[in-house]
Amino acid sequence: MKKIHRFWVVLLAVAIVMAAGATQAATITGVIKANNDLYDPDIPNPVPGRTFAVVYQGETACTASYLTYGGIDATGKFEIKGLPPTLDKYTRYFVKTWSDQTKEEYFVDAWFNGNGINGYYDCASVTTPIVLGASETKDVGTIKLQLGDWFSGTVTNHGNSGSTVNTYVLVLQQQLKDGVPTNGCTSPIFSISPTDSSGKYETDNLPIGNYFLQTYSFKNYLSAWIGFLGTTTNCSDALAIFANNAGNKISGKDFTLSSTGGTISGTIILADGSGTMDKILVNIYAYDASLPGTCKVGRWVTTAFPNTDTTSSEYGKYTTPTLAPGSYYIQSYSTDGTYENEYYPATVGGSTTACTGATKIDLNAGDMLTGYNLPLYSVTNSTISGFVYKTGTTTPISGIYVNVYESTTTAPYYGKWVTSAVVQSNGSYKTPYIPKGKYKLQTYDPTFTYLNQWYSGTDPSVYYASSAAVVDTTTTQENINFYLNP
Image (cartoon, rainbow, N blue to C red; front, side, top):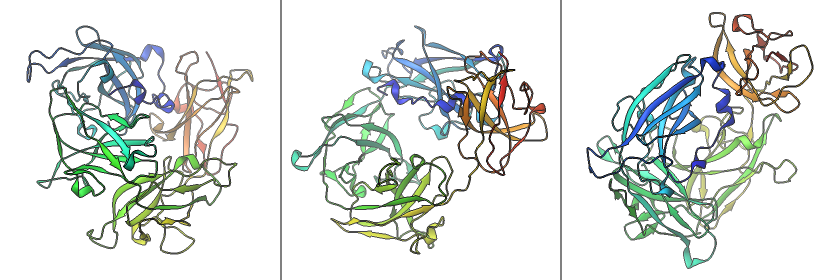
């Protein structure tokens, strides 16, 4: 990778670290080295300040959220402290390496998985999560990294007119499926790299293997692939390109984009008025007549984003990136689960969650189709809100979190983490929309200034979930207040 900002710091990742006092904090240690005993004994080991260990937390490596990272010393050892203990499957840990390509560190990033040698490049292959006990130090072993080649090139518009800003290059990894190699249409995405202001790009370092390169643009350009005879807009004509494990740049992988195609637009309508437009995406899928049954929704093609400005007359309107002539399906996607994911329907003025009821949209070159609207209906419409005060006062506390857990009647008297809310400067908090049900709430202070306490309905709040009050969200709940002790 090239820049540490790629590890977006998700604020709510802090919230799901659960409740842990400073004395309970755990530590992860390990060693990162070069795999120079397998390929080339002259390969230098990772350099401090160039290679790091990155910690994620969640149920699986693929769904885990970034939490923190730590550097290595001259021997490759890292030590990451201050981690709350694991409470359930949602608070397990995963560790991945990260090498800074801009500082000429050309190792392929890999996940630790308890095997102590090569790790895994694919998050789905990580089967050994890290479980931490209170005050425990867990050694995850030694991982040995391989060098990787990377691709570079330039993305330009046909005739060298028009900007290619907001265009990305997708690296698709060729795999075997039922003994047959995948192609440019069916290979999964391995990594994504942006273009700069002049259209140039460089991919991440890649493990040895075959790859396809594809563009994805938020501008008026069709997606394109590197083909046998240059750029092609037909994914089946994509060229498989071999990357070795030598740490070399494979340059000259250039694209010339065409704008011949069409667009589809419409408006997302939040039918019951709840939720926010910034949590909604519109996915476009190809029509695939070869699929069995009546559902012909094929591969994902692109994503459109509705207008989120509530003061604009264009609020909720979306327009797809330029699409190649063909047939498509449109489906909304609610990123926080507030709304059902709906297909553009077979009946005018409605929508459907079943792909068998979706309407196929035929698009010709030059078409600018409009009116493909989607009314969305929420599946969750309850929130919990309140204030956090110093005990015995109405002095607000800010900068901490309120975690929401499912309520249970058996020890430890709370279930899995559901969501979190950030406490504002006036001490107020409000959760996202959550399913109707029964919950218990607990504060979490990442600075450990205040003890983590459960909502009890009284002043002060309590320290044990068994004594916590149950919040029933059959309706929206307000004035669920906390009173904390330092």
